[in-house]
Length: 343
Image 1: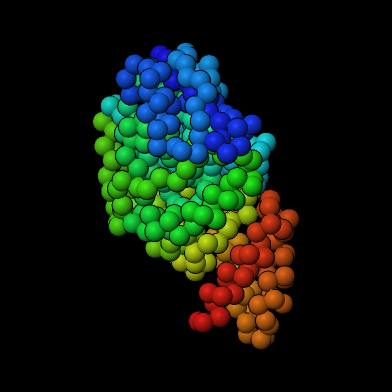
Image 2: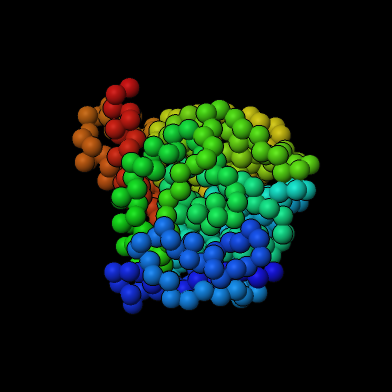
């Protein structure tokens, strides 16, 4: 199998170049490079060539956590030039006739490496890409899968959320992973918006996509593979990486409690940390952190503490239990305070 590799440079900074993999739905054709770059005025094509699969892009390491269910565990870290935005857990499920991808990575390059990992396992068409929520580490590789023929699935509120933050997300990505790393990384508008539930037929295997009330964000989805009892929860569950609140602490606890009652779920794939965790125990640490933060915030409000006073102190006793605590905890405390002060 041959893949199309294109070397492109930034039009306004020609010293910043990168080799990009362009998925081909038919035989590799270098002429397709002109079509690919045609809508990208910010890039200049330097070279295009067809190469054997795996030659240009190293596949991400994946684990088969259940039959036909593959997961890549991203770094538990902030996005950087060193990790290229590979900081979230990503997965794919292989059916008899098609593949579904769950989350696409924090850059075009990560999405390409995930695509290469899929092609190392199967040549079946990639029919679906489900984006579990709006955060950059989960969505910036999406264009790879749309080019491969996948329909992009998101929460009904995802499109508006991405549009609202497109400018800040783009600037943040360039700052974090560098100008070469960000080349061709772009946000993608969902093709299918999920208000409640959606079934994805992979041939002999059906995935159930579910939209949740505001929790980690206001646009969280989960994906359930009934064949193996595997539930992809996106950032509704964290392991090692401190949970981050960009929605509602109370809503998040409520969603976790509702999911914990589902006896059919054997394991989850969290958004950060291990490739899979047993359920419901795998969500306990996330829930415990949120519950402790809510309890301490209510107590601080009862004492009349200001936001500035409370944000520095709330949750501090849990510092040793999580990585990236000092990066995110004060932000979480601020979010909890603002949510709970109007109870």
